[in-house]
Image (cartoon, rainbow, N blue to C red; front, top):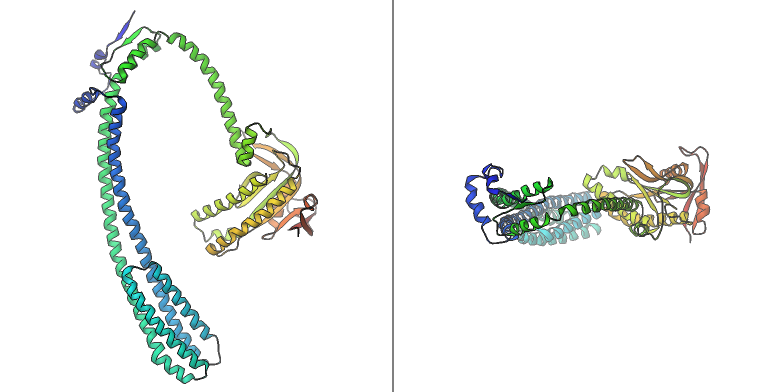
Length: 523
């Protein structure tokens, strides 16, 4: 028996949902267009994209202007600040000159005068690199007056050094001191000009910001309205035939594979219904085949998920190339817990805690990320297993999961390369935070417990034992830039590095005194 789905009867009972009356003419018009669904959707999306592109272009233009105004405001504020510094430098020269002339036997004032002059010239040169074009004539005048000021200062200094103090004092009063007031007048004018420009730029910035806010709000509202209207029209032109097909599929789901469906659409939905009617004849057989295929697919998915989890865990501890080699089957490893003879490495930054008080959170995260990235590259280069980061400390071990006969040597070579790398970072840190950062390193070789440790919800591949604690204590004890190792490590690496015993000490957590060696590069 053939069952024909009556779309008209379904619509009459309201099963299609409440289609707004004012949208019906538009929905019918869109449904009757002889075009593919792809073309209809593309046209709607294109219209919305044009609106969004227009809003984005306007926003970019206005934001560009705002950005340039922010840069201008920053430059003007800097210009005013530097001008105040230069006034102080001019005033300082006058004060130092007076002290030099009054304290003839004290030689320290003349160098201070010329140090202030150098600072003034440097500030003036810097101001030229970013100053507004309108201020360039004033900067030229400043440079001219400063040349006269420098010449008069040279004359006063020369007379003073020849012992002609009274003449030097007279030249200072009649020339040098008066010219300093000229410089101060120009600088005060520069400050006033900067303030006026700041006020004007601020007003323009506020106007542009209001314009951008209104424009974005308007475009957003229009875009939202158009998008909702187009979405409703397009969706209803597609939902009605879809729901008719849905009823036929519901009958098929109930086991009525002889159902038929008819739709008036002249697009892909017409082809869909014809194919659906042919497909029902084969669904019974295909359902059985699909069930079998689904069971096989689940097994494949489970295997792939396990493989991905293993890959993710390996790449947390090992270099990407080594992890890929293991996953490709070139090397075989297991992450089970066991007792092994390994070398453990600890390092942490000296002075970093105090520096964080001067750093913004974003700066702290950026500097730590740069540091850890550099250190991690070195760890992977030497075949180490990256255990974890603890604050600014790095924990690494060698010899597992890939066996390494030279695990102590690898740890030591890595330590020296880290010291070289940290020196490259020191200059940047010192210039930016006025703090010298160095690392202290501790290395211990011995028997540890290594494996996947934790709960089913969260676990880590790590090492435990006295040798791990010992390496951590050595890192705490190490001076900045120092590598401390145990006697067993020293014996394993004495052919590649120099080392000398520095003490036998008792460390917290270690039950007996141990010998500590400091490592130095051989030769």
